[in-house]
Image 1: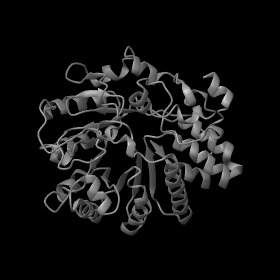
Image 2 (image 1 turned 90 degrees about the horizontal axis):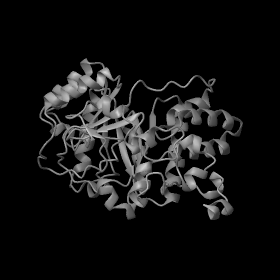
Image 3 (image 1 turned 180 degrees about the vertical axis):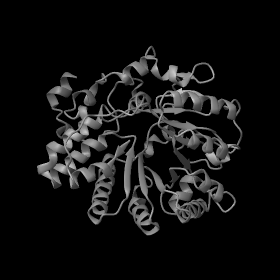
Image 4 (image 1 turned 30 degrees about the vertical axis):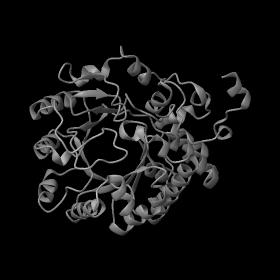
Amino acid sequence: MFRISQFMQEIAQPAPLGIKRNPPGPVVIWNLIRRCNLTCKHCYSISADKDFPGELSTEEVFGTMDDLKRFRVPVLILSGGEPLLHPDIFEISRRAKEMGFYVGLSSNGTLIDESNIERIAAVGYDYVGVSLDGIKETHDKFRRMAGAFDKSMHGIRLCKARGIKVGIRFTLTQDNAHDLPGLLRLMEKEGLDKFYLSHLNYAGRGNKNRKNDVFHQATRQAMDLLFDTCWQYQQQGKPREFVTGNNDADGVYLLLWVRRNFPHLEDHIRAKLEQWGGNSSGVNVANIDNLGNVHPDTMWWNYNLGNVRERPFSAIWADTSDPIMAGLKAHPRKVGGRCGECRYFNICGGNTRVRAWQVSGDPWAEDPACYLDDDEIGITDSIMTEG
């Protein structure tokens, strides 16, 4: 995850480079349930509106939460499917809060209404993220449900009215990139707290729609717009949070943006970006699916590291006998192709390994979704020929 707002703050008020402090444990994104009332085009869990057998019981969830707490996991993001369809979502959420986790709810928003908003507010979620794929027509087409946009906006407004930190999650594709400016205007109009842009990753239903991923130029235009918008909020003193995910080349692209706009700060920002270090799948980000399988992150659903019914999460996560985990935890990672030769490898860490795996079958190949050209990352014809 790339926190744009933090770097904009660093541009506005540069601070000395301190000691890097890694989180005590990974952020855990937990797909509590696979059932969903929608069938979105880019769903990585390939959910549907039906019950899926073999899901963790609530007691098993509680037992795993105890292990996560002992392992010093700081954050739980409760997801699905649609987590509000889980019969014990509020009991699980309240217990997580009582245990001291930062607790986020990742919802499509259509089920947030007057029947449950008071229970949602009572939990005290630290953040509620609602997925929007564009403005009205675009969103409804992606979500395959007429009226989905209006229902999601109703849910967002109910959260906002009750003082819950709420924001938009947007997955950028070729088919909805044109709606990004409108969503940013919507964020301003509704006074929302956070905007999260996810680059389409090749997993689940998104993998089947890989041909519809945005062209690299469209990605650059989207990032320029996010950087410019975030900087405007920073200058205006408005506390808005902008975050991206699933493409760590965003850090390098920010450095190029700084080079154009604040050249005197390039070295400082580069040092901060290198300290960030890029992709942290298998290190600081983890996923538990509805069956209790553990994955390096949410996009690795085709690769299981173990199951919490058979071994505690803490034992699974620390086990580097698995070759993928060994490679992800290596520092630096051994990555080939353009990523291995990139002059900014220390910033992005080789980007998203699951995308390389999905496309080439080799998790250590170059990431095909890097949208920087060879000149920008210092790749010469001779290097590519020798490679």
